[in-house]
Length: 371
Image (cartoon, rainbow, N blue to C red; front, side, top):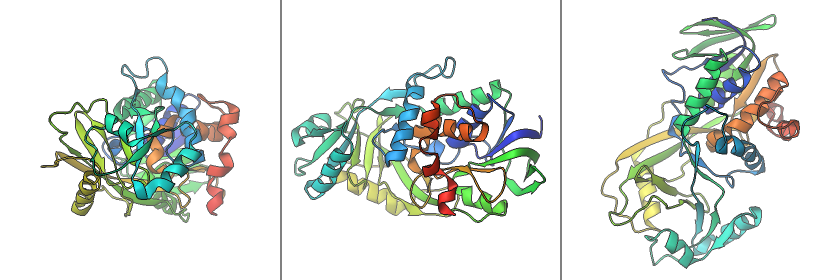
């Protein structure tokens, strides 16, 4: 194992892992992860949905850049499909009609659903609720574990290194070299990539920089039993149009989230009882679901920049410090496209997308906008 490389990436979530896979084709890469396994935090707790209508225009564009990869990955990347078709339905009650109109106007590929059409798709909708909706048939379920394992395989096949249990304790730049000190050794490289998720501002401060305002927000999820007399396997993802909750089929159960965004310090996030109760209550306001127990519960930290748009690019304050942060809830669905843009900025090379696509939003996602 070498301690010297061209690029050191701090953080082996989906952002850092996908970038390491892209870079390893062109240069020597070391991927450092403080936990015992890659993808332990936000990536491993993702709702695993590919939703092209989710996020602002920049997010949607980069999601679009990623779609072909997920539908037709490189040969040998995975022996299972990465993306399985599942519709998404945005629902609106009477008081949310303005939100639904805005959604349909902003996303021309969505189609309107009447109350009766919604009821055919989700037979347990509460008959007392007059809901209408919007249908998106362009997304589906992502196999996050298969995606992570595929990227890790690419890293290793191109002689990149993945080192776990390596918490960064110091970051210094001497001449043209970064020295990264961890509890699992010291490493040197020309470029350091800050892909530390909820810890992104912490890593910046370790390097002597003020943070950019990357804020970790806790999101809660739980699994409950479906109604005994319903086959839920073909149900869509159902999202409240104002994102007050969502639910979807998940391995024979129903995954529910209150779509909470509670500010948090960087940590191993755990669910709060109040958020679990809110999730169940909000969903029960629109569907007839008897929740007798929670089978599994968890929480993760989704990290956002102040404008809720990615932060990707070199920091102008110090040479060789690159940001790949602020993925929020879009990290998995945008990983191939965003990591290819980052690869282009670091090496001048791209693997998946065109020069025009790679350069389209460079200014929009650059860290300079917060300085």
